[in-house]
Length: 331
Image (cartoon, rainbow, N blue to C red; front, side):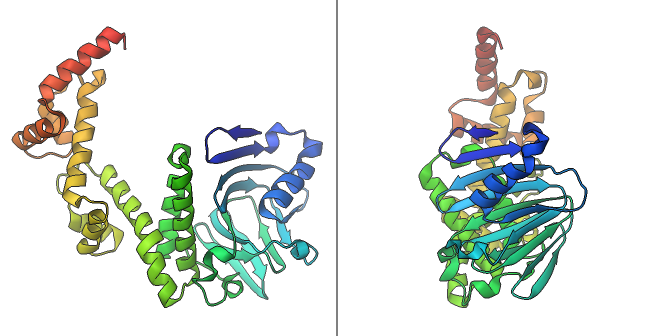
């Protein structure tokens, strides 16, 4: 078992670290009762195994779980514990089924579903991996006409809100991004918004969520696409908008809300890449022009001018200074 350091607490444990005879009881008492408030029941004659990673933000428990076939159960006896949280499951691998409120939902990889803790429910799975976000019911109650009625309804992987949520959770799992408690609270708020949209927020609630959590997740996805395609000299606001299935004006709007523009952000990221390459001894034999092209610049004169404006020296001056410094440091 490992408790990660930092203000965003992270707890990891695995059955491989626990004696076989104690695995089930540990998983039931720690993971089941303390974390997700569900009874853990293995099925068949399979050797029981599990791996879990837990992260805690203000008002949010984030769970990544993999296990042998079994069931997670919210029994009639359990619902009297006063817990009215909502567990939002995203299936990552394998197949699983959820039963609640007389409904049965089958989840394929990428699909999601919510389980309300105020009512009995059953989560049955084969060998699988999934993510769960455990949030207070009150966090999204104002966005939905009936939170409980949103439980056990399939959210297909094609859902735009779910797709953005998965990308946002990828950012969340990069531990250092949540070192600041204020950032943690903001991230939790954005996640509430995306869950509410995925579950079918009302018109008024949806407008708030789209302007807050969905916008933040969309901008993160746009920046990720830009970084993945920096070397593409044809990269433009139009190509990014097409990939994200939004309008070019909306992309521009998101950057304007950050006090910048799409063009300024793209230029800064390309300059930063060239700046790193020029300082790296592994690229010492490459021509400056080749590094500029690899960073996405199509015009060497434009690259040289932009580099000097940004860093106060020419690319060749920076390269010489950086390589000398590395050599003197023994790198």
